[in-house]
Image (cartoon, rainbow, N blue to C red):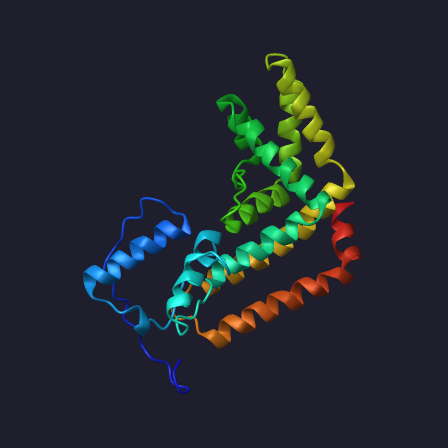
Amino acid sequence: MVGGEIVDTTPLAVDLLVALDVNPVSLQNTEDNFHENRDVLIKDCRGQNYDNASNMSGKYAGLQAKIEEKCKFATFVPCVGHSLNLIGVHAAGCVSEITSYFQIVQKLYNLFLCSTHRWNTLTEYLSSKKVLKSLSQTRWSARADAVSTLHEGHKQIIQALMSIAGNTEQPRETRHEALSLFTKLGNLEFIILTEIWSTILEKIDKTSNYLQKETITMDVATNLFTSLDDFIINLRDKFDYFESPAK
């Protein structure tokens, strides 16, 4: 949006560069060679945008910092989608109980994935419901899918675990792990966390999808972040709301 009017933008790829190394110094050398070979002046640069990997966006040693040393007008604009992902990662990682919760979710997925028989047992109990998903540090939509399946099919997943735990044809270690996960999934605290994180991740996922639309504008993106922030803050007063269905 420029001067209150929406304008069309036309992406133009001048070149695709091959980076033999991803450290900031190597990336800078690659970039310098590009400018020299293509006669592109770095002083004309007016913006940078990458994902939020530290080698690219690092404030002091990242590529964006090295480019700004050459041109102070080359303002770095972080990717809002990756920024939202990092917010979720750090928010979940700062509480040990939440870290343990997601570890259990991943262990649950691993238990069923490692055996075709166990996976078939799970899908039989889940029927038409979603299947379990692996977690991902870079794609929080995967976490939304994983917790959503656990939330919707909690009863069926517990039944699948009991089936495996009681199957004498399964290795003893597998039966023990299935029984252990059965106990953890039946814990009231775990069920409440599933209720809470299903709600949070669904909202984050919807916000992320909106942020990735080509027609998104700066004011809309700002409002989306504000709305998400208000939504999560308001959840602090809704413990009874989450506890009731968990009992």
